[in-house]
Length: 431
Image 1 (tube, rainbow, N blue to C red):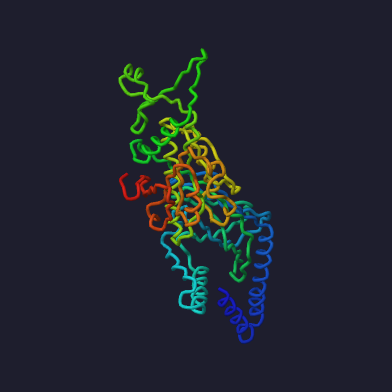
Image 2 (cartoon, one colour):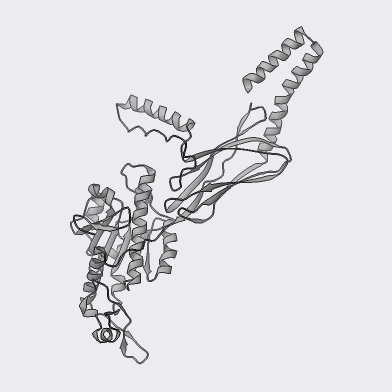
């Protein structure tokens, strides 16, 4: 457009000199005045322009939500052309699935320092120019109205804290000769809630954990509940495989014609602990693959907690909160777990550097010799394994099946693998 405009000015000059001077002067004046007028109008609009990005607080997986782009100006002057790019991270389905993905980032030091730097410069040029599947180009304009709203559909695919942002915002004039930067709104986050899977009570891990909890409780003096008459009374539930036979109420079972188990285990409530290690693995993998594996861990942990609460094994959940401090809460029922699931996702998995001040285990669990501990992590490093070996609890280590070969296993731990379908498989054994 700019080259064509200069050609038009040249034609006007030729017309003025060799054909009709008066008309040529009028044409030339018009062509020279228009960029000035267009530039002034664009500059005035830019001063009064405000762009905001809004997202709902939470959303469910595979259910569309809308990113609202609101453009406001405090002048009746028309808005020429506002170009921007909307980017959603890998928590969402691609906004622009037809775009080619970026080539793999060069490996540091590959081919020598000079070749690596040249490859990085080339890769950065491609990244700035090439649209990726996660980026959607937008161009909007407005007339005399003061406000306009645009809605872009997003589809969450992984639970966690998804980030949506507007960037590379530029305001062009009517003649496409100016290209003014516009202040970008802050990135917005959407908390994508997990789907809590329904794990089976006859799974090997649940049978093993419930047996270990019952055995630990039997080694400790339990204090039964007392009724209003000061006589000891017990709550009961249905028997599930793995429960200790010593806890069966045979008299009540004969009356109800199926096995009933006493819930006289107040000490056991604090003996089963699930620790979610939110340190992000340093293993190289695409973002979508990493998020899928982290989601496996989160949803499987929630499913196991729901199973424990359902069958009378309330336990405590420990995780690193938003302030990078250990947070612990006793899970007694499903509704409480659903609320806590939203809370823990606000921090979620993050780089290990941001959690460097945390110990591998919460202090309260480090010396608890009578507890049963499920430690859930993406990949356990040598340092993590060494720290877990100092724990006195009965330890179960849970990692994604895909990272098992690169996981350091503590000597005192039983390794269990979390499969993509949220099943639990003992390393070298059966489900």
